[in-house]
Amino acid sequence: MQRWLSTAEVPGDWGASVVTVGEFDGVHRGHQRIVAKAREAAAALRLPVVVVTFDPHPAEVVRPGSHPPLLCTARRRLDLLAGLGVDAVCVIPFTLEFSQLGPDEFVRSVLADRLHAAQVVVGENFRFGHKAAGDVALLADLGEKYDFGVTGVPLLTEDGVTISSTSIRALLADGAVVAAAELLGRPHRVEGVVVRGFQRGRALGFPTANLETPPHFAIPADGIYAGWLASLDAAGTETDLWPAAISVGTNPTFDGQDRTVEAHALDRDDLDLYGTHVAVDFVARLRATVRFDSVEALVRQMHLDIGDARRLLTAG
Image (cartoon, rainbow, N blue to C red; front, top):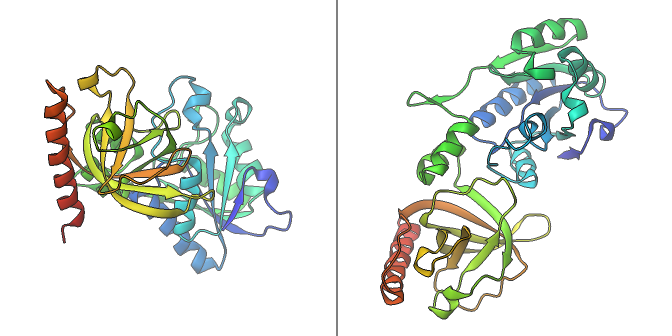
């Protein structure tokens, strides 16, 4: 898959293509459906598929301080899109200047002049241009002007709930990682670099990888979870994978103040992951975070949590 970090990187000899546009945060099942429709159109026309997306999130540029919690890193977003079989992804730097483009100018400069769109496939709620003035109907009108067709894909719903990045963020905020995984099509992943914490887990016999996570990232509600801990190489590829018990919270038994994400690889006390880029996949929530009256009571509960995590992760 080709990766372009601006429209300027699109090859000069790039021909006609089928294009889909969106933030695609999380690349959830709704996004997957839109990409699948774009691939169907591309197969019929015998053209490549290009995904146009943006970085940073437009909300942070248009309304600073309103950045929604992100469901995946920019790199993982591209990797997930590559896994859907697209031919290229164009990541447009979303600047204040870019946000001022009107709908016609956006279509002309991005879709027509650079990507030579023959067909544009978007979700039926797609908005574009300055102050989100453009919708699918206007896009279709502009398509007639710039000679491309438009397909508006109905939003995917499940049990009456629209699958969206917003609904997934709400589930994660409640700790409902199983339901979030259903909408994502995979467990929610949090990435970060392992840094030194207070090393309390090691002293208690449960060493943990303490993640320094990117800003604006969607962290599930405080609690204890079962999941997977993976080490990643420089390209973001998993190099090792361990079943894990994961703690999210402030460690109230020790009067902690900072919210942390810590993962204990089950049955492993020999790992040295400091400085390693790792990923934590959340499979299920085991319990809420509570304050224990003693360290001994905490240790007893940690043994129970690890047993629960092991049984859940090895079931079936």
